[in-house]
Amino acid sequence: MTLTLRSSASFINLKDTKSLKTLDLEFSGTICFAQTKPSCRLRVKSSMQEAQLSREKTLTTTEGWRTDPKRETLHALLGGHVQAGNDSKVPVFVMLPLDTVTHGGNLNKPRAMNASLMALRSAGVEGVMVDAWWGLVEKDGPLKYNWEGYAELVQMVQKHGLKLQVVMSFHQCGGNVGDSCSIPLPPWVLEEISKNPDLVYTDRSGRRNPEYISLGCDSLPVLKGRTPIQVYSDLMRSFRDRFVDYLGDVIVEIQVGMGPCGELRYPSYPESNGTWRYPGIGEFQSYDKYMRASLQAAAESIGRTDWGTSGPHDSGQYNQYPEDTGFFRRDGAWNSEYAQFFLEWYSGKLLQHGDRLLAAAKGVFQRTGAKLSGKVAGIHWHYRSRSHAAELTAGYYNTRHRDGYLPIAQMMSKHGVVLNFTCMEMKDGEQPEHANSSPEGLVRQVKMATRSARTELAGENALERYDESAYGQVVATSRSDSGNGLCAFTYLRMNKKLFEQDNWRHLVQFVKSVSEGGRSTKLSEWDSSGTNLYVGFIKQKTTKNIKEVALV
Image (cartoon, rainbow, N blue to C red; front, side, top):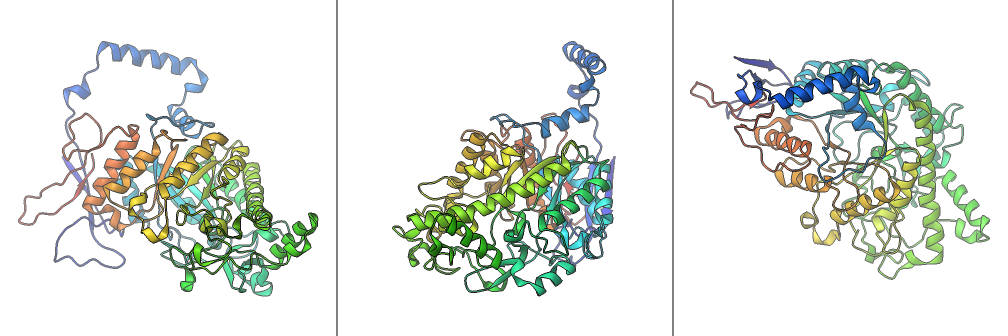
């Protein structure tokens, strides 16, 4: 018997007909769940298996920590600093759309979401990730929180037996790669920024960036009597209190946003209004009055007042290349005594910001059972240059002579936080030669840094990819041949294109592969290996061949 679920899900479009017009918002889709008779191999247990099951049942009733198999599985996922081995299983999560919760605070298209979660569960994914936007949750005023849309999502995720990663997104949505909607900071925060523009990051020419509150005022009561760190802490505490019954069980991870795009970095390469284009070096973001005051104090503390008046004067503009500047070129000033002072201060401020925020998050979520993570950007362009210019402007003091990722990994390790890193799907050979890029070299360095710091490493793809090559690169990266393996991988992102026939097949094959420690390289159309996962195309007994995804 075949049970066919039909939904007007905007995420799922599996019919391949030329006459069907795809609507912008909603369209018809089909998911099939086929019931098949299990083979004898699945029904019959050997005496050895029976004995093992009997022994496990006895242990389950006698050992308290084994009374709940779900908790066992969760403990394996959320345990301490486990070094992933070559045969380790890597749980896969899938990012939900950025507009999963509407501006009105409701769950967006719940019927479509329900069908999509059902499909993802059948594909074998561990769970999903969602952004909890500051601009939506605390939109109505200070300390006025609305979690209703997220509550509906949590219950739906639980119903389908999935897990949830929640990102505390203290940044705006819009203006960066992949941003498909606009969610600004809360209106009352924007009002404060209009009164005091120095609350946001500023470049040398005075251009303000409203993506995120400047870390220069972390400890100052600039948001209606509260410091930014207090505001972030209060929101996280409200989330904890609202979802305390789900933390550690359904909500297994809290990713703490620490900058633009939720990443621990400065907004040195903003795409909004064409300010920056790949592979430009970006610009330092140290020119709001709070950052300038901090720089001046740091310079005076070492008796070099002249070093505190400004950042490097010859560091170029957003879209220049290292060799176009006096500061970043091969034998430029980036390796001078002054540069060491400035870059240590600039990167040190970023580390302090991360340390403050993660300490606050740890205080809120400790003993809830939920894991904490923090995201670091994969800035792979100009990685082959001596100065690593694009990384320096973003706040990562990583050069030919210095490891900029080990201090970050050590800071996260201190708080027991998973380091989440992007660009896991990228290969060096895919990058344009003029970008002087090496995503593979960068990933290897981060893997070694997390291993040295004894902190777990999780991964994401930086760009939307659906091809086997990208998935294969993630599988290879997930292994621990060089540094840490991955403890989890989050796929960017769920949309209607993901559910197209070949794209869906590639995803299912990938999930199967990493769930087997990267050993599986091919998922046949007709799976006879005894697994509970099958992907194929069902031919209808009609004149039209309608292609569908079948999930058993």
